[in-house]
Image (tube, rainbow, N blue to C red):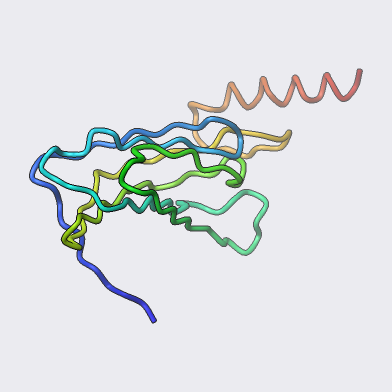
Length: 139
């Protein structure tokens, strides 16, 4: 059974921030909750935007984390290496109304020796990384 809830936008923009803390974890901060909202708890939603390079079936993952009202940030460990997520935080207030933050995109750090990337911005970095990996495996 699924519950469908319409999330409201707060009266003031609710910006969240996030960054990777390692190859397999992300940190998300939602400390600037609009002052007119009284949180009962928060729901952190991470939806992967593209499959990992090593998944041939194209599967992606989604994660939900619940945090009580005293928390305004969270570190999410054990995520796939070099994966990108659309991040959104929901606030459930004491009346049961649901509000949503602005959306951000955050990516776990790169890892491993074989990374395929498209786009001219990363071409030089990729070539340098491959050269370094080849030199270290020869020595």
